Image (cartoon, rainbow, N blue to C red):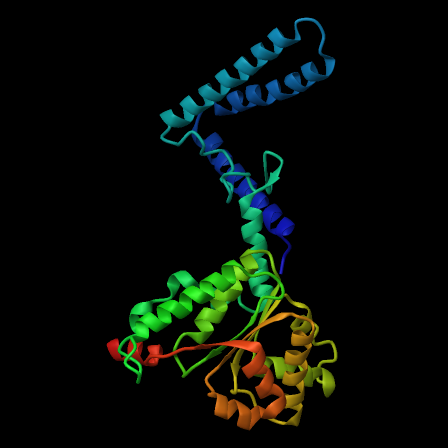
Length: 318
């Protein structure tokens, strides 16, 4: 992934090249424009020379040169307008209008830099693809219908759960409580977990998102020599780790050991973790035994998702 500096440099390069191409087009189509461009270009070194030499009457000479330059720009714009082109047709059209793709506005870092850093962090986290369409803003609560077995509105319950997750993400700091998102398939657990990850990245914290199987695969690659260079430190060094779909991975003694190692390490070092699973607590205890079960049950805040499978609802309505 390119650095922000590289991205901005490439944007400037492309914008400048496109402007030069448009300028060449104008020179072919507008008689007399080349002469005006030459006059404009000649003013710049005269301004620079005046700035270096200074001397008597500097302010008056400077004002006169600036006025000359401004009049030449107006002359150039008039030629473009007469030929049916907008005044800025020969100027670079930068991606960020605020900073001209330099990354700074008034000596301060431009908002576009922060946005680009976040975008790079999304892909580094493993959330890049998921975040193309998943955020709190794109979650449609209208799919949560009906009532629970206890007669409580599913939508009301889910609205409350989503608000809690929004607050968690907004107020996140390293060491925030761990979350266990639990419930049946297709209830939006991954969507919510991704939304939390996106918001936390936007706050400037490091996030790693991985499926339970992907996490185990990384440790297996190192342990059994498939890929000794596989990066497993990212699971234990990030501010927030999201383990998605616990229970879908191939279960073995090595699997249990890898998962326990990560979960326990992060608890011992007060590092925040979000886990999603379709399993109930009885299934978690049966599959993962006491060591993992007790930690998920006792050290994580459980958020229970309810309702009908949203993916099925969407398919049925097509």
